[in-house]
Length: 217
Ligand SMILES: Cc1cc2nc3c(=O)[nH]c(=O)nc-3n(C[C@H](O)[C@H](O)[C@H](O)COP(=O)(O)O)c2cc1C
Image (cartoon, rainbow, N blue to C red; front, side, top):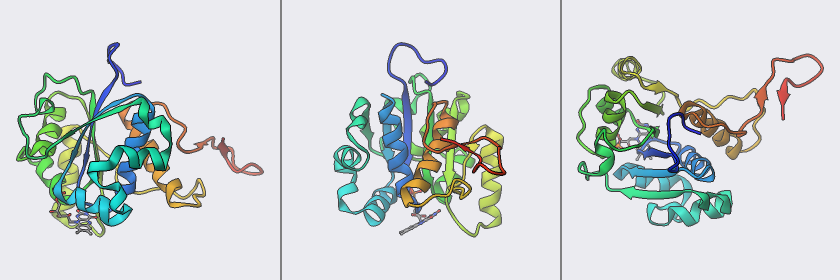
């Protein structure tokens, strides 16, 4: 559970931008919904395109809830989603008085990361991220680009210095993933941990090497 929340269901903002890795966004959304979270969802124009390009027309924003239910199971109906237009900088989550406990930008483009690093607040994703930083709430940024330019690396540092957690889309392989879903589970698990939620999305590394494989399942 997210620290500091009341008897209302926890509320988390999720922003999807136009970087590769839409599956990280859908797995994260499903994992939050399964935990009865209310998701304030914002999808940039290129985020919408990448959802369709990488996951197919079934994953388009207009039918995201049925897609998540079909792909990850009916448990997602424990939570709820409010979809905001990215141009609507007057939405409730654009204000520090909104009770959103945290926000994740997954995946995060270099463009949106640059805007967050410099506090531009030109659209709802940028503004909501800015609000998280100024209110000292959890902001998790999942950048995806390779290789990275010096300005992009500097923008990562600026975001980290401002208080964001930089959580690059770099799934690990020590847990021996066999499918794309295993990789997405790993990233979603890291994101949930960063937002303060317990989960079992990947096996815990116990540090016991040798005869065992080192995992607690
Ligand atoms: C197929 C495709 C893949 C892309 N992948 C990335 C990426 O991995 N990282 C990135 O920073 N930008 C990527 N881009 C570029 C961004 O989508 C582009 O800079 C866009 O303007 C970002 O806008 P947004 O941050 O508002 O979503 C990609 C674009 C396309 C069409």
